Length: 461
Image (tube, rainbow, N blue to C red; front, side, top):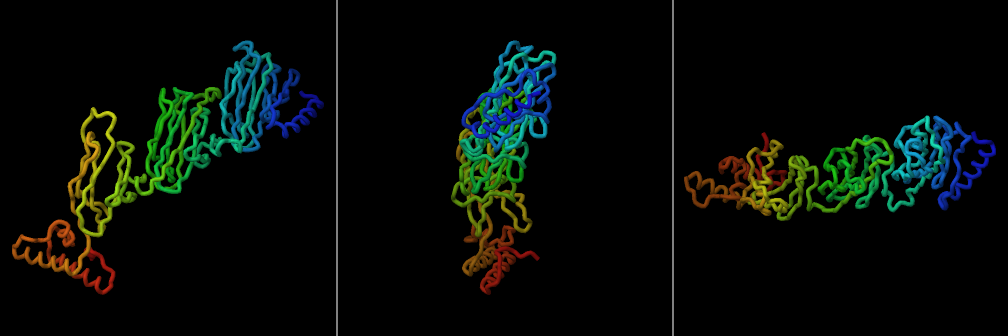
C-alpha cells in the first residue's frame, strides 16, 4: 500500500496535471514493488492521467493493476505500453480496456513488446484499463510504462473525423459529414458501427469503405434509408483495400450506414481492424431516379422530351416511372446505357415496358402499350411509336366525331378519325366510335359550358 505521504504527493501532483497535461507530458510512478494490493480491483483503480507516462510493476504472483481513465469530452484515446522485455514467455502481460460498467471492450494477451494500441473514439466518461501477468506464477520482473494519449474532439479536423463508441445501433449512430473521411475500429467480430447523415435535396449517394492496412480484411457496409430499410450493400473481401456501394439517386432525407466485420476476430486489441468510411453526395434535382422507385406507388416522374438518368443496382432491381398526359398522344421511348467492359456476352440486358394506368381500377392494365428490349452491345435503343388515349374535345372535335361515326355507320371507310384523334374520341375505350362516345362527348361539352365540374372519361355508375 502507498504511505500517507505518498498519497498526499500523488494528490498534489494530480492537481498540477489538471493544468499542464495538455501542454507537456510527464512521467510518474503509479505503483512500486511494495504496493501490491492497492489497485487490485476495479473499485480501487488508480487514476491514469491523460497524455502522461505512468510507470508500474506487477509486484507478486496474481497481482493485477487497475487504472481509471476519465475523458473530459468526446475524443480519440490511444493507450501505449512499454517495458524492459526479457523473455516472451515469462515477461508476458494481459491487458484489457473496460467501459464504466466494467464491460470488457478490448483485451490483449501475450503482450511482450512495446505497442501502441489502435486509436479509438470514445464519448466523454470514465473508462478502465488493467494490467496483469499472462502467467500468474511468472510475474514479469520489469517495470512497465503506460500512456493514455487523448485528442479531444475539439481538436479533430472535422466533427466526424473518427467514430465515437458506443455506436452499435441506429439509436446511437454517429453523425458523419458528407465527402469527409471518418476513421473507425472494429474491436472484435461482434462489433458493429453505425453512422447517420441527412440530405436536404434529391441527389446521388455512394458509400466507400477503405481498409488499407488490413488487406485480408472481410468487412461489409450497408446503406439504409430513413425507414431503416437496406437500400445498398457492398463487401470488402480478401486482398481488396476498398469497396464502394454504387451511387444511387434518393430523395432528401435521413440515411444510416452500418459497418461490420466478417472476420473471426478475437478481442485482442492489437489485431483490431481500422477502417475509413466516406459518404459522397451529389445534388441532382429531378434529373436522376430516386430510390426506392420499385412500385407504381413510388414511381419517379418522367418528364416529356427530357432525359432522366437511373441505375439498376442489382439483377432484382426494377425502376418505375410515370408520365402524365392530358390528351391523346403519340410517343416513343429511348434508352441509352454505357457499354460494359466485357462484350463477350450477348443478349438483351434491359427490358423497358410501358403500361397505361387505369384510374378506374387503380392499377396497371395487363396489356402493355409497348415493350422494348435493349441489347447488350447496343448503347442506344429507341422503341416504336405508340398511341395513348385521353384528352378532351371542343365543338369542332364533336363535329368530327359525329361526322366520322355517321360515315362509319354508312359503311364509308375513307377519312375516318385515326391515330391520336381516334383514341381521343374513343371515350368508351372499346376501339370503336359509337353512341356511347357521342353521349359522353355531349355530356362533357354541356357540363363544361355550364361551368360544372367535368372529366373527360365515363362517369362510374
